[in-house]
Image 1 (cartoon, rainbow, N blue to C red):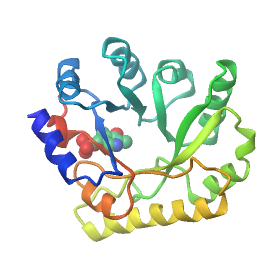
Image 2 (tube, protein in one colour; image 1 turned 180 degrees about the vertical axis):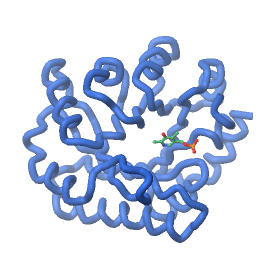
Image 3 (cartoon, rainbow, N blue to C red; image 1 turned 90 degrees about the vertical axis):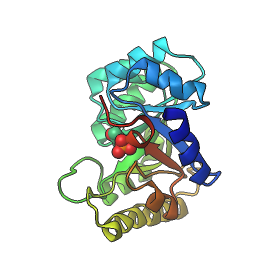
Length: 217
Ligand SMILES: *Cc1c(COP(=O)(O)O)cnc(C)c1O
């Protein structure tokens, strides 16, 4: 049951780690069930689905976008998302900044770092993120809030831990290097199968879908 799953996970999460309920592919009734159990933070990975759910569900839900985002879909995401966690190219970052300028808004984002094994190609390499942050002033309508990452898809716990340790250390390194970026502190790591390891490694927000809602329909 959704409310029991939420309760169980929350009881294990340290108070400083937020729980993003990843509701992609789930019908509205199941999101409402989570909402009624007190959940207010939801994550979606498809622009159209996010927009449709955001207009139909209660307005006090905080939506995060966690999927691959094409620049022609910004208008379905940016009006609704409190945080875009999945910025994975400079082209996208520039488009988000332009949208923010046009709408007189500052868009909070995470930069997605490529940490997993080869099959997951999404995300920046370390040096690309460095270059962006050295030029952070160029993006006046973006607020850099931290890093997001996905560990290798494997049962090998040590490999997952190595991925999470790498991104966590990199966040520390960047915070030392760019102390003027005061909001750059979030570390979005951990999913249904690996969130406990992520919490060990310094996660500030876990993104959990199937362990809350069951298999995606
Ligand atoms: C689907 C998804 C999740 C949640 O996955 P589960 O294994 O169901 O917890 C987390 N992060 C991203 C980016 C996702 O696409």
